[in-house]
Amino acid sequence: MHRSGLIELETVLAVARHGSFRAAARQLGMSTSAVSSAVAGLEARLKARLFHRTTRSVALTEAGQRYVQRIAPAMAEIRGAGEEINSQPEAPAGTLRINAPGDAVRMIFEPLLLEYLLRHPRMNLDIVSEARMIDIVADGFDAGIRLAEAVPRDMVSVPLSDDLRMVIVGSPAYFAQHGKPRTPDDLAGHAAIRMRLSHGGLYRWELERRGEALEIDLPPRLVLSDPRTAVQAVRAGIGLAFLSEWHLTDDLANGSLVTVLEEWCPPFPGIRLYYPRHRYVPAGLKALVELIREKNTARRAAR
Image (cartoon, rainbow, N blue to C red; front, side, top):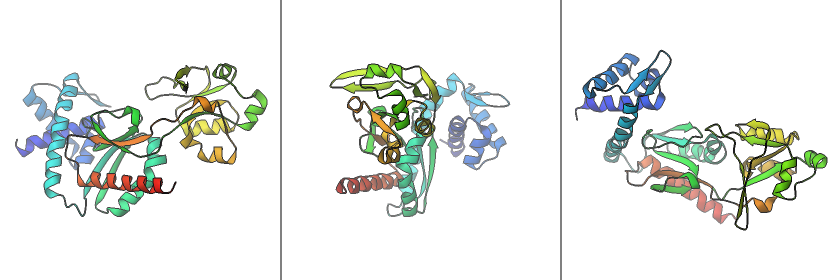
């Protein structure tokens, strides 16, 4: 393929990724008019419109979605081939793009990021934080971070955390006024602080004990999208919440919050970094995986 053809394909992928000609232009180091011309030229050759354009937004058409899904893996292979030829294993260089939920970046991944950047001064990181599950290959990412249960089976998975646990938690003042639930049925008499999922629904409290699984769907006193805000509401005595222990470490340690029904809250596999199995792994990603495994070994040795 002629070089201009590759540029057009990269341009289409950038516009699809950002939903904006201007943002794609910034990423590619091109002018907005050059980006628009490249997309229009490809559309003319394909005899198909790839994007819906309005004055405020750019979105893939159905044909554009199919096209991007087909070309994204191929372009990743082409980029990987170039990186493999030009890379120097002793000094990884380039940009690593990772998609991860904001909580994972803040609470698990961030300490690794800082050390990674200090160890590898020629590496850049582009971290996109979002809760929705995406196709990391089609969306142009080198790796993703999600709960183990959400990682696609055809991906290489590297542990980023130990097992996690969701717990039902309240403040001592709340329990002094309303009492502690002794069974899951008792939860019906309590105020609930519920979390909203990325698709808009409310997260149900998933409980399990000795093979018996329950989904608790309480009417919410308060609905939130940010677990950190939910912790504040629980501290204030608004009600009970079902949250990951990783948000509650200090509060549980100092007694400002208390868990109930712990026997119904078993641990589950934690956070994983994942990347495509059948694709060239750039030196920068290899270096990150090595650092993660080094940290995991040190954590196990410290127990």
